[in-house]
Figure 1 (cartoon, rainbow, N blue to C red):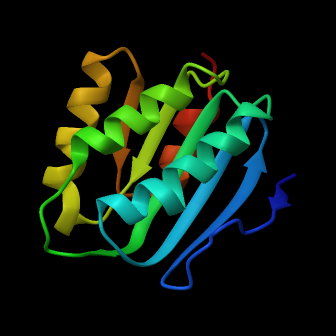
Figure 2 (cartoon, rainbow, N blue to C red):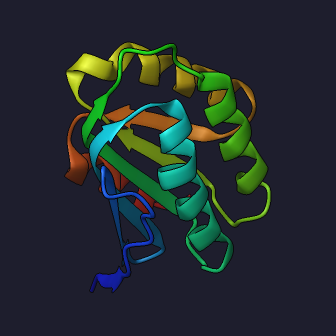
Length: 136
């Protein structure tokens, strides 16, 4: 049974909601963003929640985000995720993304995978949740 967590988003432009299913945290994002906003409003709050949980799986549904066309800072996103990953029980991470942003997400996946994070990309939320909740 999912349990809702409160919205910790400090920005009105980008909204973030959480819920827990089994040992998996599912985060959904909506709004306009850029990499710096994603770090402050999505990744840091999500991984802060993971530090205090027993969740071993994470699904971030980014289909509701409209990315700005400014220069991407994927290395900053990677550094943020890896910094928090080492302080949580996270074993698997799934990103659910729209077709329009797949190339950036593929770069992010490749970098994180090469650094040891078991990460996959999905376009279907239910498939992502099933994978992230499955052991191991």
